[in-house]
Amino acid sequence: MAISNPNAQAAMDEVRKTKETAARLANGEYPEDADHIRVLAGMIQKLAEQIERLVEGGPSAEALTPGDVESRVDREAAAAAEEDQTGRHRMPRPTR
Image 1 (cartoon, rainbow, N blue to C red):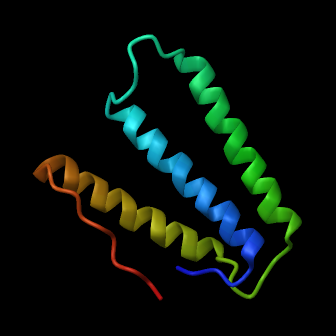
Image 2: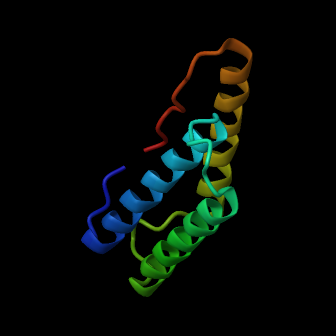
Image 3: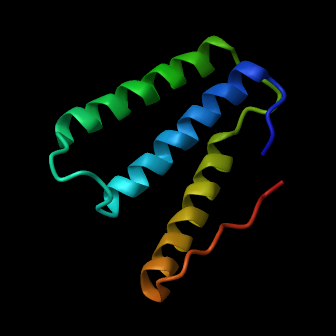
């Protein structure tokens, strides 16, 4: 989903990168000498900064409703469960 607000788009890009990093860590892709607590704390800090950035930008016409978020979470959870069972990654269907 493309976002017309450049500040919000930049924040979402950073959130996606953090999400990808979290997925790699969850799959065991990290150096043996990694300090897990510091890595997690850094990721939480980055997400908090991006949330602040999004909130400071104010609401927009593209803002998701709680129902949109709940629906997306349900679809992603179903896709993750299927991936666990099949070993294949399945992308959730776009809603818009």
